Length: 317
Image 1 (cartoon, rainbow, N blue to C red):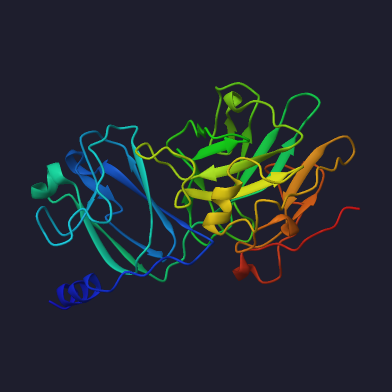
Image 2 (image 1 turned 180 degrees about the horizontal axis):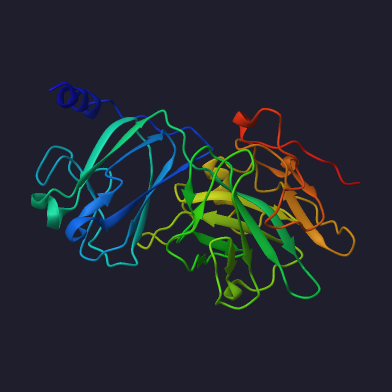
């Protein structure tokens, strides 16, 4: 009875526009469990402004907000089509409180879930190193989990200096959190096979230019348009301002202005940029020139207070 009263109270919490620029991430798998008719996990907690991603592992399901078909407010927040096992959908939490949801074809079989949007420790993916214009064509991107909880980078999208995105080839790419964050290295010009959860081969991206940008987007097979501030996760541009996806990053509050960029400066023949800020930092001021050091301890040392999930900047002059 108490749980029912609590959920009824939360369900009427008024909508609040998300103002948090640093979006964390939550993930739910669609079509798991007995007879593949469950959400996993069924209930998630997250913060206002975080992104929750549903990844389809089974076919014939959809995701609709509400307590059930025909209920008040059903489908007014999100209402996906029925997708197959490669489907993905991401919603950025724009209201606080309790948000129930269900699968229309399997509601009568108990396929329901919920989001409690209040205060939570979540994963937080950030672009933390970029090697570009390498003489041998072996350019790389590093993405780290600077949040406080386990994350999964599977099916996220990466856009390099353009308006199209390449999708992470694996459905599951688990990334640990902690004072030494889990890291995933993406090889942008080295084939398409042999990917592991820490070393992704995405040769279709190609060589990274001397002037360009990298943008990370949440998984979504329904709305694939990149100019969408609710879907972008992180962004960096170098060499010059006004690169592709810069306006979307500014609209999302994860980059200060379209004209701000990290200078393209080589170190010992390499062009390598490293993020030296903490989870909530954005902009060129938190990037520095460094020597390539992918998949290992960052050029930025871990802080004495691990609870910040950040790192102290080391200058290379």
